[in-house]
Length: 382
Image 1 (tube, rainbow, N blue to C red):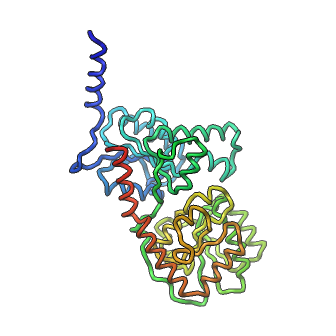
Image 2: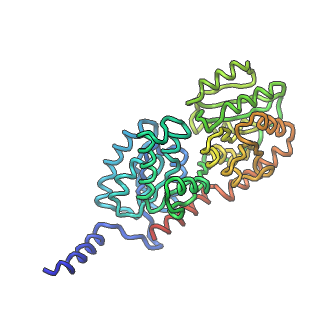
Image 3: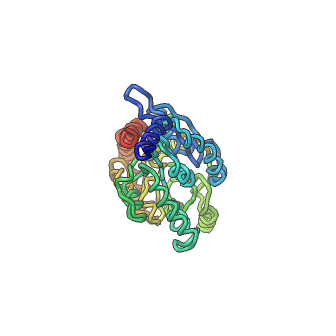
C-alpha cells in the first residue's frame, strides 16, 4: 500500500467527518459556551447574551458559587465528549476558564476563543499577595497564564492596557488578543432619573474589598466630609473588610453605613437611590490602573454622576468633566474634593449623567459588544 497517499486521504476523511464546517451566511453559528465561574457572573452573563444574539449556544456551566477547581474538573468531564466528537463551530471558554483551557486547548479541533479576563499570576502574586512571584505557586500561576493563552486561537481581555500587560509579561504576540469591554446586562441596568434633592446626598460604593478597590481611601474621604450633608453607603465584604470597619470605628464616622453584599438584581435599585456613585478603582495596585471596574459600566448605563480614579484604563474610556469626575487613586483628599464639588454643582451632576449614558451607548453597550464579538468570531472561525 502507498502510505504516502493513504495517510493524507485518511486525514481528509477524518476532518470531513469529525470537524464541523464553518456555517455559511444563512446558517447559524453553533457555539459551545463553557465557563469555570458561574454563568451569571457579570462578565460571563454579558458574553453569553451576546453569543445568543450571534447563533445557537449550548452551555456547560451553572449559576451559583462553589469551588472553581472542583467545578472545572466536573465541567472538563462534560466537555470531553464535545472535544472528541465536536458538533459546534466555535468553542468558547469563559471566566474563570484557565483550568478548562488545558484539556480544551490540547484536544479541541474547533476554533477556540478564550476570555482570560484576569491574570492568575498577577492576582495571586501582586494584587492579593498570596504568594511571591518566585515561589512554586507563583511560578505555576505564571506558567498557567502563559500556557492557556498560547493554546487559544484568540484571547479576550477588557482593556488595551490589559493586553499590553499580558503581551509583555508572558512574551506573547499582541495580535493574539482582542479587546472587548465588560459592559453590563441592560435588562437590569437601565437609565433612571436622578433622585430629587434632599437633606442628604447618598454616595454609593460597592465592592468585594480587594486591595485594588481602595475602600480605605473612600472611608478616609468620608472622614474629611463629616461636616457636609453627605452619607456614604458601602456595600460588600471581602479581604479588607475588617480592616476598613476598624478604621471607620477608629475615626468615629457617623456618615458611613456598611451594608452586606446584595444580589446583582438589587444593585440597580441601590444605584438609582444614589446621588453620586463611586466607580473606583481607588487602590494603589498596578492592576487597578489596567482595568475598568465593572461597576463603572453599570453606573454609566444607569445615567448616574460618576467619580472614578484617574488611571490609564479609565482615562482611555472616560472624559474628565464630560462623562466622569476623575481623581488620583489612593488620594482621600482628592476624592473628598471631587465628591463635594459634585454635591454642590447640580448642573455638573446632570451633565456627567447624560454624557456617561451617551458614552455607554456608543462604546460599551450590549449592541456594541455583540457587534465586536461577531467580528472576532468571524476572524477566527471564518
